[in-house]
Length: 179
Image (cartoon, rainbow, N blue to C red; front, side, top):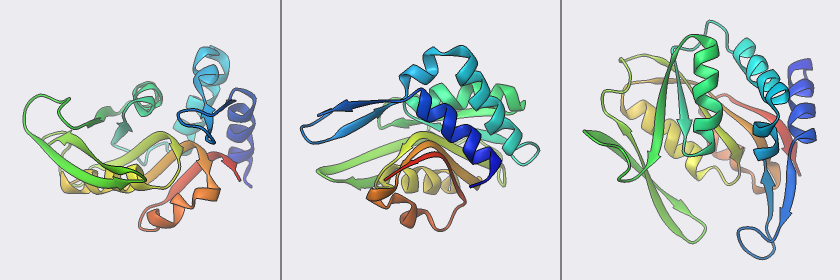
């Protein structure tokens, strides 16, 4: 584990709580809202993320909804633009969509067709990597609009769900790895 990973993992671990049986019985939800509530810890995580990607990113794309909370201030710190990846039907104007399967159904996410210039180096960010469905769909959506995914970053990876295996086409960086 690199020094960067140790520092991010430590901050995330200290400011994450487990919520049993949420959203369904048997699931232990990793709640990172305590991290967001602590300005110093959250700022440190953003600084570490910005430092890690310094000079290699043109745009940060945040996945709804906690990816917005992380991605928008990260983009501002890095001096680059921010693009939201939203659930179907939430963006006005012309969008491109990407559907994906979930454990119990399917979902669709969207992004504006004119969100980035062709070839833009894009960092996709979200809070948690679980089965990888949303992550893969987000990266594919970025590529559909002409962006180049330089990395997929999450604060928490649930390794026992093996989502990383579905993302082998893109560099994946995580803070805290669980299980």
